[in-house]
Image (cartoon, rainbow, N blue to C red):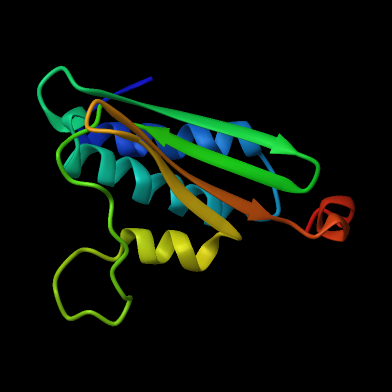
Length: 128
């Protein structure tokens, strides 16, 4: 569990790195969790004073499921195109591009945004 502050994004990135070690798609996993944690702080009740978010990682075979659970809020996460000229708003597009699949579950009282990264079984054996 992380406090809902920007410093916690760095802590979440460190958590992913420590948990996954030499996982073949470590950089993608770190970026995905960073984007989801940033969204939790910016767009949910997790960003209010005393707010929190939770990062969960699960490795099953050659799949990694990364989740960020926030404290909910009135706005549902939205996917914007990567080519937008607006500042910000690209986090879920990045998550969508890097992951095999992603989604949102929950409501105004708590949401989980998740993404699944698939790794070639050969990459797991060769360590690349």
